[in-house]
Length: 270
Picture (spheres, helix red, strand yellow):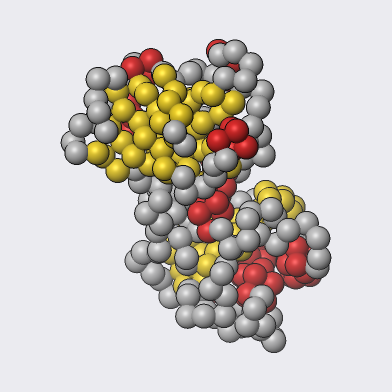
């Protein structure tokens, strides 16, 4: 059973007609839809950032929710549009790695290639598939449509490699990267709590290095260190993040997505 909820995650920005156009198509086809704006301020064409955001919301929405993700630098090319069922929810997105975190620790129940010409607008722009193909597909599912009608089954989807840290010389040390900067300036990395704990469970035993700075130990929460301190801690989604207590780590370090991060236990050299 579908919940009637549709979430929207895009890089369209908050100005201009694009978000409203997508909503207009959905509401015209499924007028009782409850629309939830996750964000429209993903950095333009930043699939990595969008993947992190979508992966972070899977466990917070009820079964039957439909999610529409449109960060689509390959719009109009041969890249596929897909519908993926995960955790009793459906995700519609370009097949460009945007759903990497959604399926990272979850097995898709069903994957469909969205190609049915009857489930799209009559005139399809080569530059706005979010409005002309994906929005009608979302509305079709919201109305209780059979996912099989979207198109043929697929066995796999494109996945980004950025969400996997690398082990260094078998030493237990890890090298990763920043994958997301949040609105507080916190830098979320691809170093996972589970992976780090499997190499050493004592948080105080870790040393984290980023942008030439060295952080001793991993905090439990922001308030454990003094105002202005540069700290490392596990965030709400289980990723290691770098923060400044009541400050902006991204600004302080002049850092953002793509920057390397090293984590090692005391006594190990990188």
